[in-house]
Image (cartoon, rainbow, N blue to C red; front, side, top):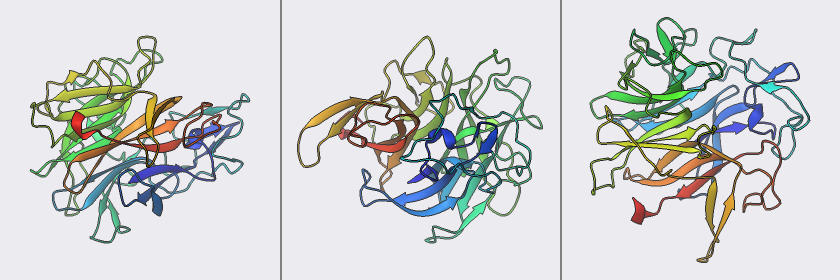
Amino acid sequence: MFAARMEAHCGLRSWHNSFNGVQVANSDIVRATASTPDGPYTVAETILNTFAHGPQVSILPDGSLVVVHLGCGNQTLPKLKSCTNGTTPGLNRGGSHRFSTKRPGGLSNCDWPAWTGVLVQKSRPQMSNWTQLADWLGPGLVVAHGPNSWHINTTENATHADNPSFWPLKNGSVLLAYANKLENNPPGGHKHIGLAVGKLPVTGEPLLPFHDISPEPIFPYEAEDPTIWLDTTNNLTDMRWHIFAHRLVSNISTEVCAHAVASNPYGPWKVASTPAYTTTIAWVTEGTASISQTHVQGRERPHVIFDRAGRPVALSTGVTPGSGATPVTPRGHTGDFSFTHVQMFDPAQL
């Protein structure tokens, strides 16, 4: 598993924010391993130092790994270090905590959330040997912007591929699910989800912009953190392509999961009426058949875990439990304490 970690025992809001006028970045990217999909996981190595965030790993046709991510790990911002127990101080005491939409002064071009990189495993089986395909000095991975594009133009006739997720195809091209804002974004509007396709350079050529295959956003509402995947176990219907995303809670819904299905990634996509997961999590007591349920404060960044045969076996999400008790936090937690949660799929429901 590849995951974002908040260093120095800090909480989620320390990822890349301004606290009382000081810009900090505590998020790095780690690789963790386990003998079974449901863990327990142990951190094996740091893939990128701060700032780096939102990794998503895929397997290329040659068997090597590709990790698409935000930030390049240049460590040009200080870390917040006054944290304890996984919670960022000052969050509940009126402290300033916000992500600037403009690159703070002093940062390298790639060391912030508006730069997307692509790491490819340079040689197997060496897990620590990676090549960065995106230009450190350029805009990173982007999606071309045209006269009919639904999304904004952020740089050089292209838009930043925010919250990226890859699905490599056998023909050598790569599907990209990403998030960005609407071309005519209303004041206060958030991100929407799109799909694009492109190629990854393998012989030293530059990483070119991907091109939209969705003429309009996948979902009719705001969302972020998409993940695209193919259900290879589904023999009952041709609707085998899925997109999960973090549905942004608004006045029209309290659901946190956006889910769409299609028979072809080029569409049409059908939005599911029932969410694939909610903020209510079912827990099984180890060694028994006892099941308990808890409600958590937040659940986002969905990813699907596959076994070695390519079958989907589990869902990974980032969870902020809040003050309620869970098996991970039996006495509850306040502030922005978060953890990565893995929930096994029920084979009978796939």
